Image (cartoon, rainbow, N blue to C red; front, side, top):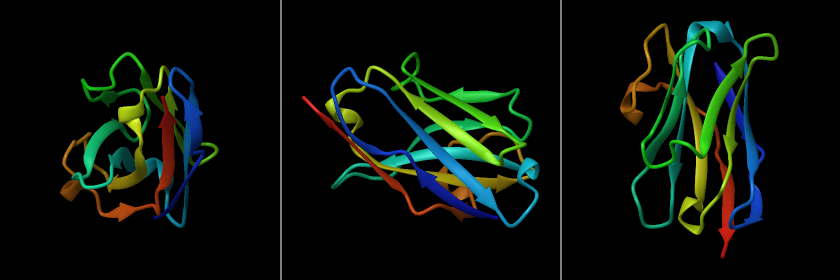
Length: 123
């Protein structure tokens, strides 16, 4: 499956963005989708994930209550809603796919990755 992330941009602290991860090439509903982010000089970290059907989600404690993940299998798209953004949320955000499996938080468990979209939060 091929993934393309979009929706990033420059926003002031407290603002919101909605990231999209559009998939093509394979049966999208076979895949769990995760979002990760990587800030300059830091390791890639897990943000959120959704299972194949969308009825199970997991959001990292660091962003819980501010970020929400959802999916639309008709549109082959997963969304990451980012609210109450903070400067420390600044990073490149990546979506990744994991076939026929439950939600996982480790990047090594995801085989297909999108190109990333930059989110910059100014103070």
